[in-house]
Length: 208
Image (cartoon, rainbow, N blue to C red):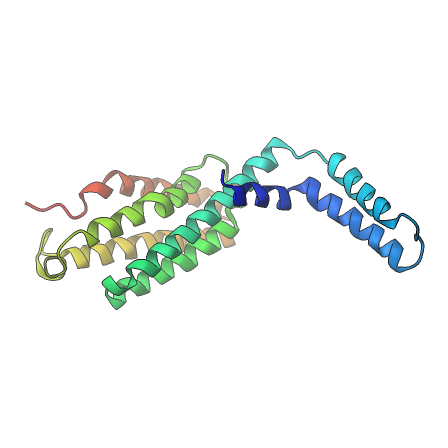
């Protein structure tokens, strides 16, 4: 884990939050004049009591690490979209913007998904591998070829890229809708569907 990730884990961890809460209580006592001498020792002591007296459960650590990982993937994908923006058509860019909105909303609710579920895996893989690799493979093609040459069922690579983005956006939209309505039972179907897409990611633009 990176230094920023370790700092975020510490800052958002339950022990630190409890310690900060007690330290703020100490500052409140100072503000109302209930403590004066050695107030800084009292505040530091209250923080220490809160931090040391609040063990962080392994499950909390795992959930926090995964949330931080997802946030990092969102940031990396946003940076990728910014870099490739000049090379993609407006319809493709529009689909990428929709995807980023859906992905961010899902990551904010990631704790509602069961640990190790197909849907968690699908969201992570879509951000980390499937879409970045899809975009990378598309941009390796000559621009004129990507725009005009039919490679599969009469579709050009540009059309195929747009179809893939629309497909993923449709699934992410349904995942988000089911998260909103707490229909968790339906979520695994979306995750399994997206996992099937990953198996064919390397052959999307293949042609004879």
